[in-house]
Image (cartoon, rainbow, N blue to C red; front, side, top):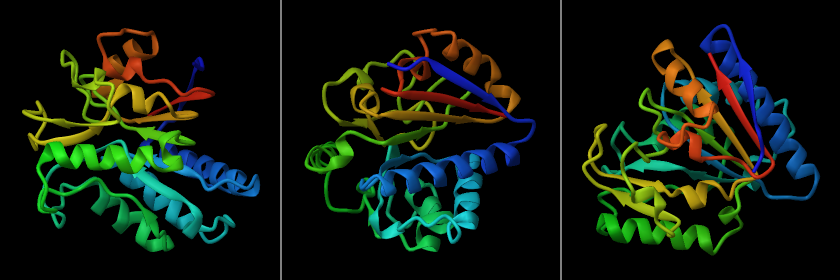
Length: 229
């Protein structure tokens, strides 16, 4: 487990540019070392800003976007065309813009399988791929300290499985898919991306190690960075 580093930014747009620059450098370095980078993306407002900044710098980065595997830490179990899907946002802001082709979306609710089967399917896909050991997991955090779709006071995330169904989520929509703590903690690097004063208290508590907050329970094997604005 790595000790956490904290990077503070004055404004969310500074955070987005800083994280995007670091992301592009990391992916380029991994490819230069002969790897196919395995990246887990997150959703949310700050993630969308980061994705747009990555797309803005993509052409000059030297990254081969057809040789990067993209995954998600969680997803809303809604129809494929729903604007609530993290994957749709990431595709529009970033992935389709740069021509990414190795994009592993979590199943949608209209994919013809139950939410339990959808979680099991994504777990198998990860288990059978290099993505099972992520090079980077990016995570937002809610004001309650939740990450992915792992919420305080709940036990789903302690499952030994890779991906789980989340029912009756305290944050809508109520049905979601999420990676577990075990799966998230297989990452070499974890970058938290958190903006807004309403999240400051939870971020401080998580960084201090308050185990009642899911965010405090996720760490990269070699690097954990909190990007805060």
